[in-house]
Image 1 (cartoon, rainbow, N blue to C red):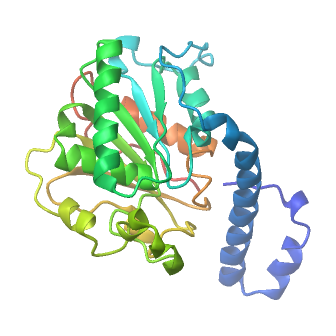
Image 2: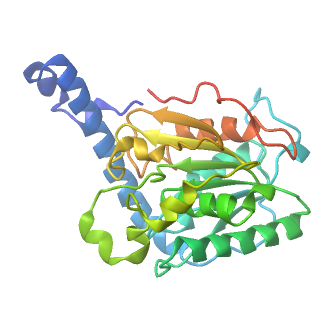
Length: 288
């Protein structure tokens, strides 16, 4: 992960004053924080445009970069994007463009209300949306990318509502699979309480899930300020096919935005064959 040091002129001084290992960690944190703030500012500008649900229909195809190896179009099912808590589909603007440029011609985002108080209800909404996508496109399955809470909602749909028949690959980005302890004051919101360790929803997700057909790819970052502990964004379940992918130097907001993560997402989705779960750990997805 590279952030220009021209924007952070005090970094050379930090290197001289701090021990090497501490300085490296502090510099990475400073860079990630600067990137998070820049992304937040941009996202606040785009947020109003993402409030309204998108018009349904096929996404126009853009030409792929020259020399990029791609699967044939029929090997690429529709992609459903699901945002995080108090967010909307605008967070996926850059990821959507990246997927489209690399042959994903059917991409849809689902907005759910910030007033949603139950992961289970949001998962049911997601299931209805996916059924509509399959009906419109004629596809038997979809791929899903969920950021933060969106990943948890999608996982609940897959594991507890039979969604593994529809979701081929589920990619989660900074999702609190084991619960996060950050921002205890946010417990006033019921859905935040469901993201805490030991919640009833997380206990349901820890139950056996024999024969689950969906393949999971969980991206987790060593500088994710929303995940406490950091490893909560990993999926640990004996019945699930999972690849946990560590990302270095990227904060929570940057996960659905950074181009290196987008490349990793594309690789994860393209490892599966039509109608079959993907297998094995995607290669080259760690961002340094």
